[in-house]
Length: 370
Image 1 (cartoon, one colour):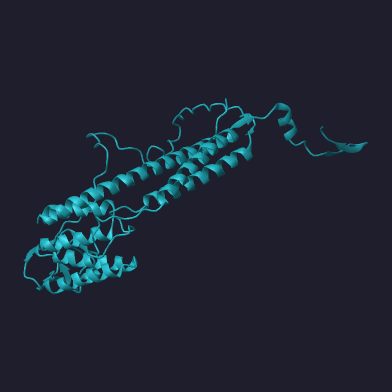
Image 2 (tube, rainbow, N blue to C red):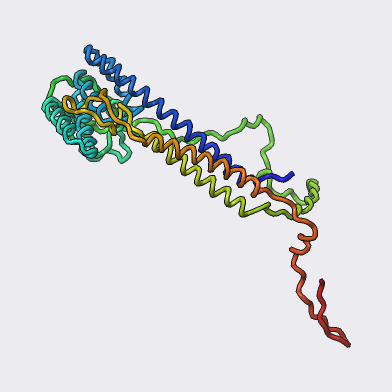
């Protein structure tokens, strides 16, 4: 029994796994959107009760599952109520930029007003380093890497305790913590020159393997692969196994059928991918494509919205793609199978040797095989 070549079988299996992952991803996306909406509603209730410490994590998770301008605005407002002025200020500016890109000027105006109101209360921290600091000097603030472009620049930070660390190869590390609580303050932390003295990490390691016992003879120069001394017997040579017989000549059952199957399967994969994207992009009541009534609150996300028929079109594309793939995969498998060539066809396919000129003492002529 013949089978599909390994390389084609692997491609078809990978394509089948890709289609299954697309369908599962579509279901996961809808589940994430439902969870994001539930988290958003719960966070709004907590914020109405003044429980901002419990509401902010729910808004963060909702934004991670299903990003939206309204969710991001409410998260910035939650940060503001917790006193995280720098986080709220930067997020209000992100909301303003996203609203401008989405063509929502009312949302952009409100977000910029909230950011401008926070700016005088921001605490700024400036980190400086010596001009002759090592090239590999790394600076971290609260565990996050601070790039060289930030050195010497006042950066807004949230009120509270902050720890600055500095390290370099062959140098003693530096760490210092400071408490920043005064609104509108501007503080500077200067990193001193790091003194030498840290042990090098790339010291030479001892040779691997167990130590040779005392009194043992040293191995001969050149290692195990070196030639033996003159007169020493040669090691026996392993016998070479006889070669395998030549495999019989085979051919594809139908290259046209195989190519048609691959084309149909590819078209099906594209249709499923497009349908999945359409379904995933269908607006929900926690997204930004919904038609909200923003007459009272431009960031209200619990009002009624209108759906279009994009979800139905996405489902149609997915179903059509699965049908194409269901037809194309069997065609590719059947057409790509290898079948043995019949003896007479194999002989016919073997080219005859060219004619040979033969010259003898008393004759000359051509000799060829039929």
